[in-house]
Length: 323
Image (spheres, one colour):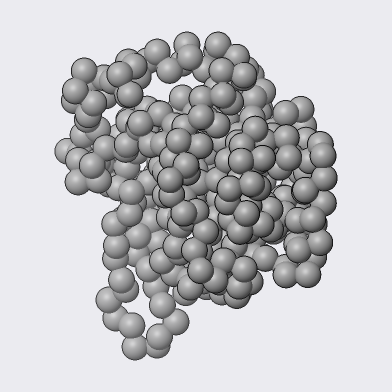
């Protein structure tokens, strides 16, 4: 089915290869209504565009400062963090000059999962499960001078005052760097580590995700492997626009033969509008992104009840990848 741009409410639309329908009469609230004067952290929403163009160093410094403030008194890593059966680590990748048409605009860089893996078609951060022996070895390399971890301004404090958490941080960072190299040939020495985000628990799987925020310094080209359909670039200024959010009403099929009424649930989502297609960001990656936006910019998406509805469906192969 070809991709189409949405036109008017009530007509079928195609996002991510699935059919969605905007409910008639739904209305997207304006930014002024949402933020009481169109403010985020005391700064008008439309001024964030100008803030982004003050340069990478300003944005990177702000992100590191906000993440460090958030992590300073909080325990980041829970018990059992080194258990590979339940622990995953991902890279929350940011970069500039991400794609033609987005030049000089800071972007979030995501993978779109291929049809050969579980949760096909979803947007996700590069990363995956821990490999105990390999990642333990790679973590030791991150202690060497000049590594992305030791170049992080807060590493010395973590190593001296939060030794156990520093050890877990190195292990989890090694995991997502390895996975990033495997999935998209990300150069592990070409990233700047900005800090960890709060963990996220998966709803459909028994797994905990630990996101690591990084800035890609120079690399422009990536080579996705069989797990990745393609790269997706979302400008940060789009994520700060309330009109890009919606309520994702999912019809979830199961493999049970006697299933008459499939489960239907609503989830908050972000719609990335592009020239030839639209992408839906939802689930754990959406929650990770919202945590980042709230910590760094004080931004929260509109209340889900106020948002227009888009419809989607997940077939019985969604959780197995055997479609």
